[in-house]
Length: 433
Image 1 (cartoon, helix red, strand yellow):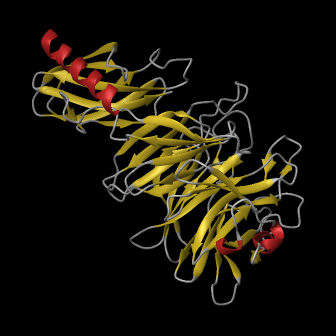
Image 2 (tube, rainbow, N blue to C red):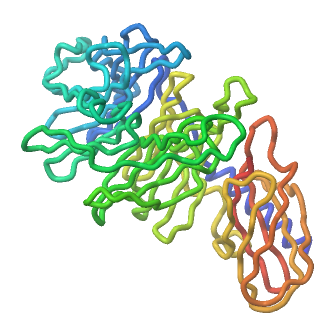
Image 3 (spheres, helix red, strand yellow):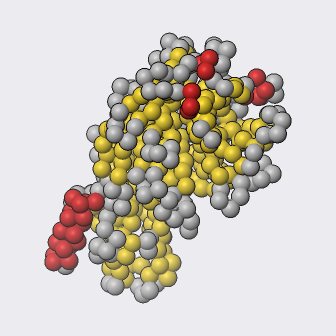
C-alpha cells in the first residue's frame, strides 16, 4: 500500500513538473483589453475598451512580441457605476477586412460594427474612426423593438452575418444581399434563486461560433447577481430555435472549437463574490474543455478576470486580462495529471464540477467492496481521506465532502479524487471553490 502510494505521488509530481500549464505575459500596458483574435500570420488582434475618454482602440501583437496600434480614438465612456464601455471585440471578416464591435456609449458610433481595411493601415500610423470603410448600426435597429443592444461577437454563415447581442439577449441576423437586420433568436431570462437582486437576470449571450454540423453554439455570461452555475452553452439551429447544449458554467465570455477533438473550449471570466472588493475575484478565471462525449475537463485556472480567448491549431491559448491590461499565453495544456499514472481516469462522473462543499461521484463497481476516497492537490500532497464503507456491485453514487479543501487565499483549488477498494482504483479531477 505504502509503495503504491509513493509510486503514485512520485509519478504525479514528476508529471506536474514537466507538464503543468505554463502562463506567461506576452503584452502589457493595454487599456481594458476584452476580445482577442488570431490571424493566419500569427498576429493577435486585441480590442481595448479604453479608459472612458474616447480612447477605445485596437492593437496588433506581432509574433515577435511588438505591439502596434491599428486604430485609435474609438468610442469609450464610463458609466455612473464606473464601468467602461467601448470596443469589445475585433474579428476578421476575410479579404483583408476586420470588424470592430462597439458597445453602448453616448457616442454617435455606439452599438455599431465598424469595418476597416487592413490595407489602409501602415505601422506607426494608426487609423481613426473616419477611416472605417462602412458602419453597421446594430443598435438603431434593435432598439426599435428591444430595450437594449450591445453587439458583442459575430460569425458568418454563407453571406449572412449573425451577431450575438449581449444587450438584447438575442442573435441578430444581417442579410448579406440587402443589409437588413432581423432578430433571429432570443434567449430566455434566468430565475434568480438568491435573496438579493432581481427575480430574473438577463441571459447576456457573448460568443457565437459555427457548429460544424449546422447552426451555432452561443456562450452566455448571465446578468447580476451572476449566479454560480447558471451560465449555459446554447445550441441555435438554422431556424433560430435555442436549446441548452451544456450547463453548469459561470460567466462564460468566450468560446472556441477545440482543435484537438472538435469539442468546446469555454472561458469563464471569473468567480463572483458580492462580499469581496472587487467582487470579480482575481486569478479565478478558468478554461474548460467539453469533449464530444459530454465529459468536461478543467484545463487551466489561476488567472484573470479574462474576457477574451484565442486558440491556435496546436492548442496554445491566448487570453486577455481585463483589469491588468495584459495578454497571457497559456501552453503545455496536456492536462494536470498523467493519464498513465495509477488509477483509471474517466471511470467516475463528478457533479457539480466546479463544486463547493460537496461533490457527487457516480461510478460502477464490478463487485461489492469497501471504498474510500483520497483527495490530492496538484503537487501530489494528500489533503484528506474519506470512507464510504462497503458498497454493492453495480451503479453507485456517493457524496464526497469537500469542506476545508479549497485554499482561501486562491479562492479555488483543483484536486484529484482517487476512489480505492478491492480491484478499484478510479480517479477524477474536481475544481473546488
